[in-house]
Image (cartoon, rainbow, N blue to C red):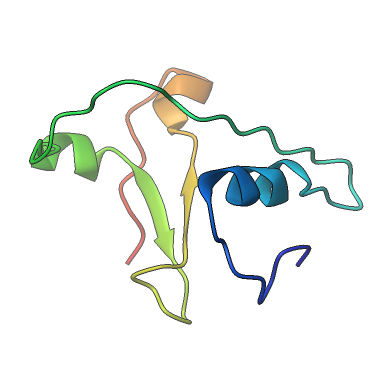
Length: 84
């Protein structure tokens, strides 16, 4: 909510808003810019994508989603399949 409706004119402005994000329960967000060159056109394998625990939101699901930690990392079990 701290940057809702505010134009993101530059990466520095965007990072400042992201880093200023907190919640009442104590969440503090950290963000930084990664310098370097990143190859274009790399694809994530279907197997890797299916291993993500992704929950799409009802409003604008192409943009709004939650990625949760994989159960296999937390509990030593099999990866959680994406929710429908």
